[in-house]
Length: 168
Picture 1 (cartoon, rainbow, N blue to C red):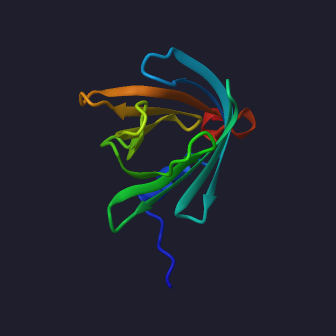
Picture 2 (picture 1 turned 90 degrees about the horizontal axis):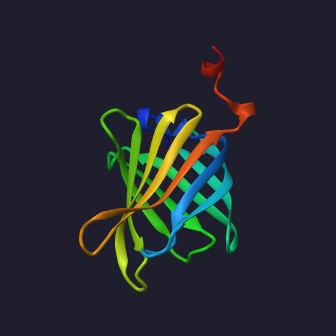
């Protein structure tokens, strides 16, 4: 079997590789206040075609662990991946695309929302601010068709890993 050659989309994902500190806030229910949280994330490459991110964060309920896989499927022409977390028993399946400016990756999925027993359309958006900062926002589409932001997190590359471009 011949190993595929990485494409531009695979190289875009490589920007996420590294050690990150994370500060975010999430809304745990429709009538709940925003709750702040902090954590870390380690993203590594799996060969030339995939990334694997493992995050840890403190929450009022204790430490959470999250794992994200991301790649690009040339046959589909789409980004693909998964998301799992220690605080839920659902496997999120990602299907996504970059915007025209190649700054925002929108990952679409379906999964449980804030109403028990219902499945909702969801989006996670990764916005590359620069090589050392990206923002992840999570959105759920309500019964009324409106998209509501349920989480926003800012990822900052750890100081010892800052990209050389910043020093130049």
